[in-house]
Image (cartoon, rainbow, N blue to C red; front, side, top):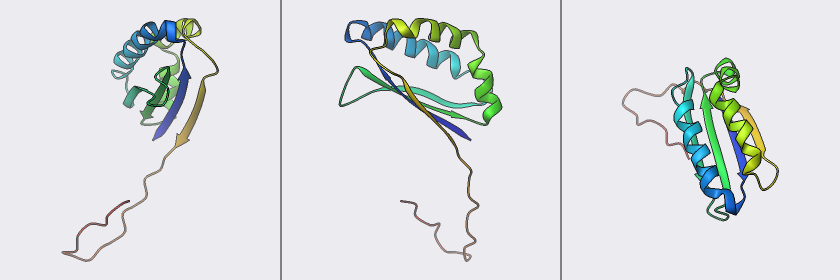
Length: 111
């Protein structure tokens, strides 16, 4: 699985437009093959910061997303609402096999 985390500072005067762009992008992206989740959140500390969390089945799905028409529209419009530098990080996540457990014992608690 691939996880992408982004922080997007937006202009206060363009906040409504930025939120519209985020909604449009989320709705279009969630229909893509390989998209597990795609969500924007508003920062609690700074409501003019959008946080983007994406989950993809694999790199191929993410690469396909980057070539979509809705990504092009989003990237063309983004400079109009930005108040600073966008920060993104990408993580590759691998599931670990569950350890064997004795029959009848409860599953482990993950903290």
